[in-house]
Length: 231
Image (cartoon, rainbow, N blue to C red; front, side, top):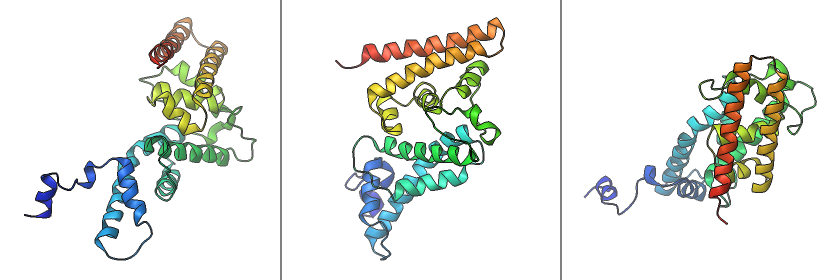
C-alpha cells in the first residue's frame, strides 16, 4: 500500500486538510533547518501551504487600501507571520491580519511623506494623493465611501474590517490590538463621524438618503450583534 493510499484511508492526514495552527506547528518545528530529512521537507511544505493559503486574502486586504502598489507590503507580511511568534492565543487568522494591520499603518505613515501621521486623528484624505484607496462601490455607495475617507483611520478601519469585510468583533479587536468594548466604542464613534461627514459633503438629497440608509443598516447589524451576544 502506498503512502498516498494510507493518507486516503485517514491514517495520516494530508497537509491540505490540516488547520492553520497545525500547519504553523509543523512549519515552526523545523523552521530554518537545512537538513534534507523528511521532517524538514514536510515542514517546508507546511510553511509554503500556509503562505499560499493567506496570499489571496492578504492581497485583497492591501489592494483595497493601498491600490496595486502593495506587493512589497504583502511580501513583508507573509514573511512576518511565517517567521513571527504565534503563541496560540486567539485565532491564527487574527494573528495574520493583526500583522497585516500593523504593516498597513506603517505604510500609511511612509506614504504620508513627512506629514504628521496619527491613525486616531489622520484620515485617508489627510494623506492626500499618496494613498490610493479602492472601495467596492457595489457594496458601499459613493457618498459613504467619500465620508469614510474623511474620518480617522482608527475608526475607518474597524468599520471596514467588521461591517464591510465580515470579520467578527472579537477578530477585529485582536487584529487592531484593542479590547472588545474598545472596539465597539470605536465602531460606534466611527458611524457617528460618517453621518457628520456625509452632511458636510455636497450631495443631492437622494444621495444623502441612500448613504444614511447604509449607515442605518450597519447600526441595525450592531444591535443584532449585541442582542445575540452571550450574557
